[in-house]
Image (cartoon, rainbow, N blue to C red; front, side, top):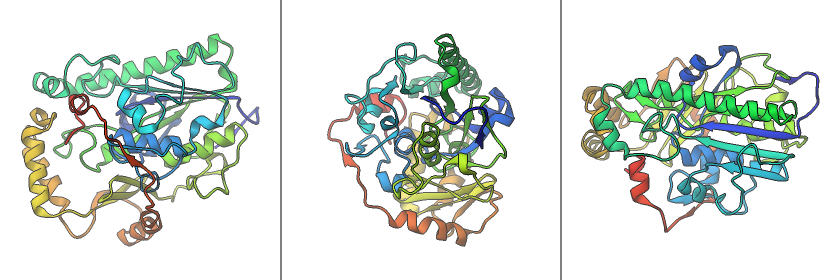
Length: 375
């Protein structure tokens, strides 16, 4: 990847479409512009924390909404004097420590030089709704058993339309040519491919693979290598004149310096479940027992907010849950590396687990349950 016609940008604009799958991105954008991206986690807390800090979940320590980043952790908002996190969400803002620290200005009000960061929930269940939810996910799933997938597809179109409107706002303000604009996602969404619906409950390719689209014509994609969430911060820093290459806190790759096709990428759902992926597939390693997994199956088939949809595929759900009790890794796709290479790659990442997150005493469990997060 390289810049043509200019050396740097003054501003950064990231549009994060919550739960937006990679294959949806290839349907909505020019495929030649879509970079296949391995998400840091399979739910919002770890993925957003990794996007902002450039760190693996095992380093920043955030896996769920009851945890939060340490306030002293440097992040993406430090790159420009005027940051904005638009529509962060109350609970996610508490996780990231941005609620009181970062302004929430819309894109037509933020002044350069800025980092503009927006979260869009159109592709998050209940699908194709605006920011305010009209009903809990559990009620939505009962009513939409036959149409949820179609409504999700429409939600993807709505989200991309909103993104394009933000681009037009920058154009109208005369700021587009000096703003690096990206469309990204925190994780994907499942629709029964492995028995699961929604996200957050298992490490699956439909959740792990997300799209990254760099809007600017000044950025040339010389090859379509897979990338990681942790690559975004060093790449964006370089684009605005910062070099993080020698800082050990940022293990990602500056994409302007090149990204090899044979790179491996780390993803982590929890302290006991992690995976290593390339652009063709991956291995997931889970440390659980049969009794625990039996309880998970009952929960997801009976009590989960997504259970009305998951009961449509009980055999797939059972197979996926039972697979996590095997001694070896679970294989997805056709990864171009071995399980031994995956373990070797992940070992130093997992060894670096000085968890720097803190537990939050006050969380709105009813709100999180409505969104399908509380398990």
